Length: 185
Image 1 (spheres, rainbow, N blue to C red):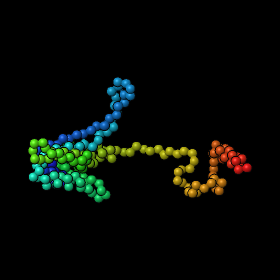
Image 2 (cartoon, one colour; image 1 turned 90 degrees about the vertical axis):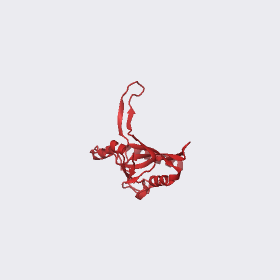
Image 3 (cartoon, rainbow, N blue to C red; image 1 turned 180 degrees about the horizontal axis):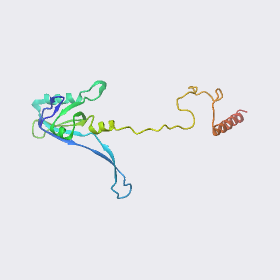
Image 4 (cartoon, rainbow, N blue to C red; image 1 turned 120 degrees about the vertical axis):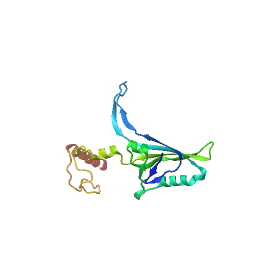
């Protein structure tokens, strides 16, 4: 089995790829024994690779780490074009490293047991979701002025500028003035 990322072969012995597709669902049963669930979409597919690299071939591990640590403009993880039979069967074309890279010393052999995960980037469900027409958004408004619109901007007293108050606010202003006048006398 071969694994190529942007045309560069990931080298190691006994390479095994496990593909995974997670289908997200929410339980709608509440406190009952109902089996109803709500489909919440397909999460990005993942490829988990495991292999062995002998100690004498440590340059292979360095190359893998260089690929895992690669970033693109803006500090984002590098996206790779993937070539692998399992990835192809799952419809995975682009991946990025996710969930880390682990290297464990083998108990009997002079080698590392390597495991890493590649997560699908720009998945088919994501493309379909992007092409789907967006749900219309209704404009909502409430009484009063919109936040950040007009106004003094300095939070000045309502005595200095004319503001329109609702009936309740006008009553509160009168009570505030009355209490302020009583306390000051």
